[in-house]
Length: 275
Image (cartoon, rainbow, N blue to C red; front, side):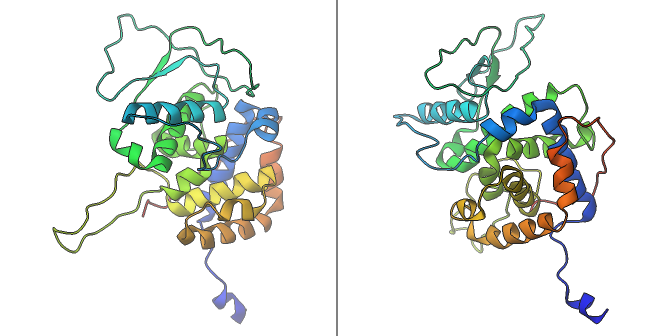
């Protein structure tokens, strides 16, 4: 039909869209629908979600680390944030770190984290870019959670960086991932301001914004609650992603029922590159 000529190209390639759904379904199978639907929040870059004051770079990083840990449902898991350059070699044979298991946080409950802690660090320059640092910590926790799954992620280990970012969105940190997706900044002269510190990235802004929209549709989060915290340049992506998800209700239902579904090989391919 002649009207097909004027139809807008989909936000993502179909293989990429299907892969994003498959990873969400995989994460839901291994994290459980109860904690996702009843105890996973959309984490906002606000003082309410990241309270506290600090007097040093490391104190600020520690505050953010502990908040990310709590929002991820890993407040009980033994882990430790060390200052950049302070990671010491592990004794041989290395002590195994217990696999993380998410649990809902109960305010006032005593922490009983015991065992060999997982060690984390951070690029100090990211402390001046809080959303990037939050996304970096969320991806680090997502790495451990994904590695503990008994089933390999859709797409295989060769795309591990992409998987861990998507699991970070699944944990509720999609706003920070989308807002800090890698962008290239070109200066016109040597005297101009240099590029801001940026986190390492794998998925594109379009991929991450679609994943954020998928999270919101699964959790029935009103779009207005997201848009006020989303970069203005990403809001058109977000609107398009919501429309595309709504056009495929069967895909959304398939992800929602993933916790009890048997593992199935998932389609993969067509990543859009960071831009």
